[in-house]
Length: 171
Image 1 (cartoon, one colour):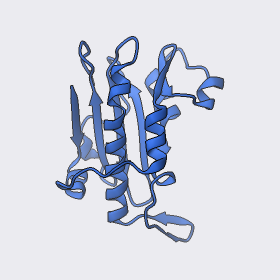
Image 2: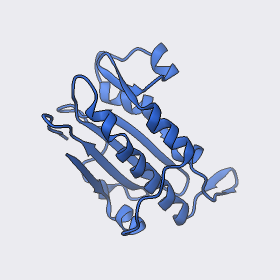
Image 3: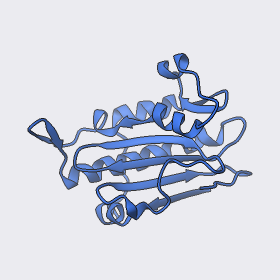
Image 4: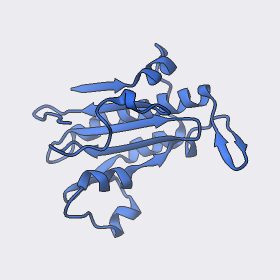
């Protein structure tokens, strides 16, 4: 099962437009995929995960830190800089958000192929300065995002839960 939740500002920004084709850099990430390293999930072939061992607690936080990246590194968007601070207009934020959603959907089959089978949450956010993507295994009692996505007032946020058969996502 796949479920997508968005805060009101993400819904307003994305509207009912079709999803774009993945930008080349994101397509490469989707093809490379994700892998299990003991108790945690990470990007396949991640050099950082190879040298950073997962902690004994807060595995969700470790995964979110390890898998997080800025979408604008891979997705060309118009941006300006004012006194060293980047500014991404609404159209650029829409592109980043839709590319992040497309990446989450592209990872679905890889999540289904994980052994053991686990539910995975992808979190995509965009604002005036950047866009981010991260994922983590859904674990009981652990979470990265605030459940009420509308509490993110300066970010457009969407959460994609990928729940393979036989798993159940928990907040």
